[in-house]
Image (cartoon, rainbow, N blue to C red; front, side, top):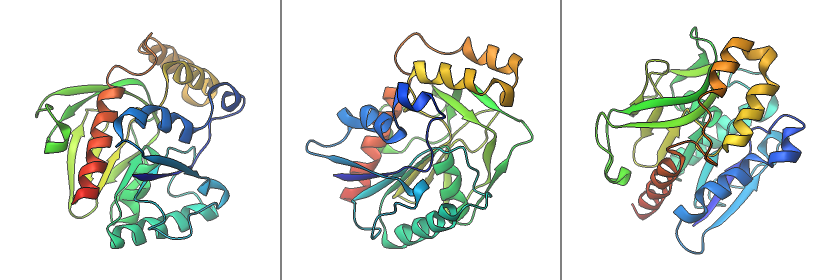
Length: 243
């Protein structure tokens, strides 16, 4: 499998030097969950570094970003066009946080700032539907992963299925047909990075909310169910390519 990581955002300085890039985090997360011989390639779309065609890779993963889908920056319009073209071509896609939101927006849904404000810390999601690629997961089962977002998918695209939700985020995990999977949470972010990220964003998020979020950060390297979600992503991409 040739998986292209569309880098739509970057860690704030100086965390980038300490923790690396988002494509690097995804490569570490997914390394053992993709087929043997898979290649992971980063594309800095945030700097207009787009692939030449939507079929240059077998599948695409869109990262998180500090931008919103509504921001007037050049790469966002081009990324929406890329998503629509990849969807028409039947190329599998995975979206994470901003990636989740922009895929929904590009394909007829809506995303924007939530009246619930910032979501931070480890959030627990309830599975609403469990396709076969989710293995032994079952409806009403829960999984915990880190979040850092103000925006949410407020209206799902036509044909989308809500796979998981929470009281804070109704549309937290979506499947669009059998080629697209999106998640609001961040399975890729290491615990050490998440703790530093919340500290850096104290002024934006608020002292009280950050302090509460930090109590949920695990002592393990990743969130409690990050590896489980990585298994789902790998299985989803494998099945999407086989179909």
